[in-house]
Picture 1 (cartoon, rainbow, N blue to C red):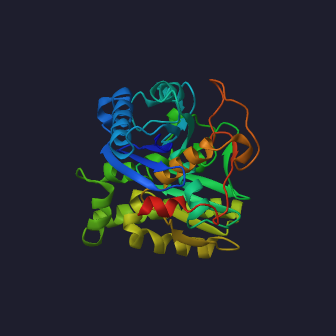
Picture 2 (picture 1 turned 45 degrees about the vertical axis):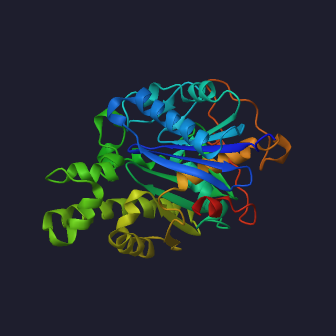
Picture 3 (picture 1 turned 90 degrees about the vertical axis):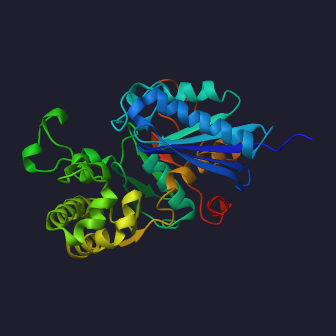
Length: 339
């Protein structure tokens, strides 16, 4: 008897790689997390993720055909490169689409940025379900956001919608090229806050130690204030129903939330609801599985308009235009992934 087809979700992060194998109905068959090994370079990190995925497929679904692979990654994934991907050396030159097709030639492939995949998961099954418009804020190793309008995640003309890590920080930054200024992500992100501490620390350690350390407390306060400045401006522009925050730094939500909520309440004409994402730690992985589920469907059954085949210079599923998102009454894939 032939085994039923399965889906594979892969989330390539700056510090870890997460993998999940699911049935077509969303039932989780297995999952795993490994260190990204980014210090060894892009090819080593990518290869480690592919090996972990193959091992999980063998153990969780032996002999099962692979219907589709959904991938989320830092940076903007294309067939022959990844744009805006400084977290791991050489990741920008990785031909990620071509490499994935070579690794899994029998499967459909769908790719997205980590923030857009996370927003897909939250809009489909999580904290942003039914919210129009809505914002997803990703506070992890890096900093980014995603915009949901009409139930769809907005990609942008070049797939870069929501890349707020490149925001200007001051009026004096106007007309300066990127190498001549300090972008927001280099001051406001998990990587940045750890690097700015007086001694080697992770961002979680900085936040945890800040109540009893005046220097760290000042660093965290500065972090929250600058993040709030940009979040308020974003909320004024979008006028969202809700802002959901995910990523590793939500482990310090009690330190982040009061300052962000205060700023939104005081600075926006119509303050949005601010909340932790339903899937604060693994929304990009859940979104990757959702991408795979969509890619595995017949074209006529996929949400949203049909999309032509992407060439080497075309962004994949979520890198251009809007990414279709179904409403929360559809298959509760996320709940099955959580069990």
